[in-house]
Length: 418
Length: 89
Image 1 (cartoon, rainbow over the protein chains, first blue to last red):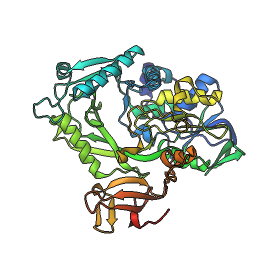
Image 2: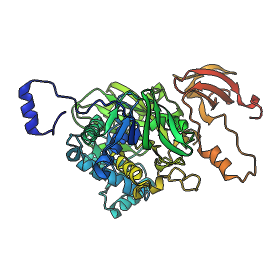
Image 3: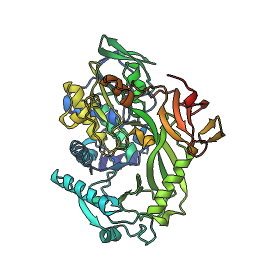
Image 4: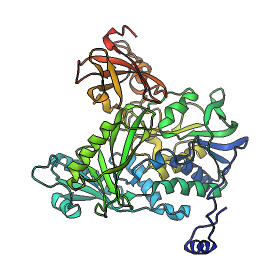
């Protein structure tokens, strides 16, 4: 088992010439655990880590159908930010960003947080007013936000299309300097290693096939590697939320859609920030290797295929070129799709379910990655205390029944009805 | 590219169509005041990994609403029928 990582450990290890040892154990399932987390993605691994680190619960297992980090934690565009408008979201995502800021030290694993700043653009005076309001709300909550006028944007982002013929003229923007990017694979590995050091079993190649129950109480899971008993069980499986919840007889306000991401061939550094287009859902940043990383809207019909449709490549590339004409000759290296658990109001669920001892973390729509530390810590709190963390009380599963949807953007699964 | 066999126009790219969601659900009766029925109709989804019966409108063709069978795990497309021939569901 590897010990603590440090500059000294790196130097000493370099002298040995041996490969680095595994960073976490390959665990076999035990007959019973206090808590089982279904889903070895960023959220599930984070929840397991915080259960052990913050709540002293160490008989924890994370079960993963494939290998950890093979889903959306490695398929996103790596952005982290906390520029949200609605009460509840503002505080939750700021909690997340604060955890991101200390995460490399906490996990003793370099997640390569790069707080390069994110700029959301406004393409008309009304949109700039909305951004000003959002910025004011952020500042009232102690979050950094700066309103930029057109001249400011021209200074910070000189390569955008400011020509008189541009289809979407740039009026200004809102900048959050603390926003940025994270090396997303390192998040899964860092949480896995830290959780493993605290005694958490990470069980890969373990697919859930059903739930063990006693009346309305969930008592464990049935898997391809046998039955495993659990005091408490949490579902944290992103795009497969409906699929797994259906095994417990639950129907969710969730539809699974495809979201594609794209990376171009590498070029020298020139996009120094994260930029969000205001005229369409489109965002772009430049990776450390030099590739432009960007994404757009969901494909528009529910699917579990993890393969995007080609017409989306064209529409997203149109956004890229409308915003930054200079990248029109860049070739795409890769594009891929993740399965997004889209909800009708665009907000997620963290909390209890109608079944006792079963908890749900899902419905993350476009915002799962940036929420990883907060979702993990709030899910861990919710499991440990059998009651929702104060930061996620607005994200209850029964909010539609109560007429209490939490509609930040109005971009839920119903893009096809708009 | 997802291709949809329109009964009027033949097989076409899905970009000619507008998606309309799950066609296996039916709207609660007009004047129904049962909130559970409306919750179920508006907000809950079976969201199956496998066979899905769904609405598509051929907006850039015959403009008819279709009911298509598609496998959401593979995107394999089955039969498409005219929605108005569907009868009461």
